[in-house]
Every structure is written in C-alpha cells, then in structure tokens.
Length: 124
Image (cartoon, rainbow, N blue to C red; front, side, top):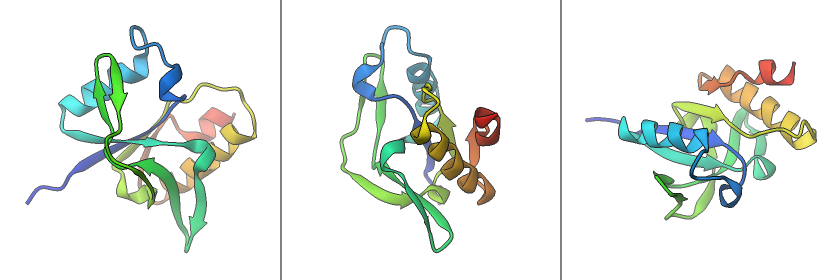
C-alpha cells in the first residue's frame, strides 16, 4: 500500500502570479511530476494550534498546469502534519501576516514537517 505524498505551498494569490515566469509554478510542476499531490495554503486564513497541532486552511486537491493552477476541490482546515513538505514561497511585505505565517510554519516544523525555507531564517 502506498501513501499519497502531499506538498503544501504558501504563496502569493494564484490570480496575481505571472505564469510565464513564476518560479513557484515551475517547482509545483516538478513536484507533481514526481508524484506529489499539491495543497495551496492560505496564510491569512491559517489557524493556530489546536490541541498542540498546527492547522491551516488548505485547498483539498491542487493541480499545477503550465498556464494555471487548478483547485478542483473545496478548501478545509487540516493539520499541517498531514503534509510531507511545505514550501514558503510568499513574497514579503514583511508585515504581521507574513510574520504570523512563519510562526505557524515553525510550529509545523517542530512537529516533523519539512519546511522550505526555514521560518526562523525568513524572520531574521
């Protein structure tokens, strides 16, 4: 029995990216080609720890295509520990939402999730 590998990505709003030159989209396409299912994480709608488990608002089944990112399912609050890896690809502004996102990701990292880029490094 194989388990589904899931990759979460915190990024700028999908409608605002330039599909012709966005490096995040290229990373998502490469991960998807290697068997990862994608989950788009919305930092503004992230939820803090509940029973010491970090949870966030995530799209259920993201899919990257060369000219767009599709989210066919709805979104739900889910534990970040359900993800194998999370990419922090949101561009600053270095505001409270950005800082809050790094703290949430740092908690996920402490629960065993690989977080790229490291949240503490982003803050400093």
